[in-house]
Image (cartoon, rainbow, N blue to C red; front, side, top):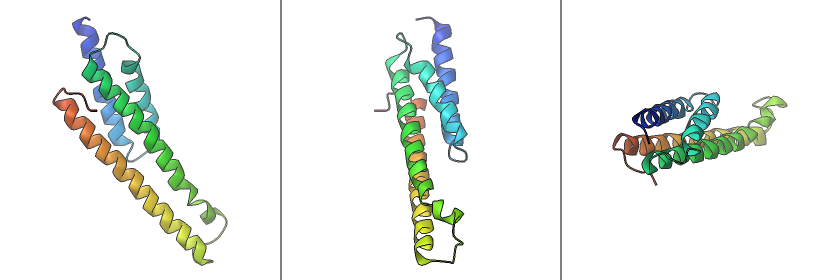
Length: 125
């Protein structure tokens, strides 16, 4: 494997981690992070530790997306009923906030763990 492709893989993974961090603020960054990590994961001659990070980012991007979609389901009643109209609408909204915070904290923890190991150049799993 050439030095140029190794540097390119590191660049892709650094950008993937940057966009994974930005995914805490917008869901569009998850898609960008996923596809940047996919560029490294599908290469046969990449180093093992950097390919492990690519799979880590892809896995956490998918799990965060699923958690965020599940949390968003709890906010659907707000589109049809005012906040204070029924008690169950308040309960759904509170559950939505709780599940959203769980998804946010999950991604933050995964990012810290992965980025810390990435800076040490060690596999994340």
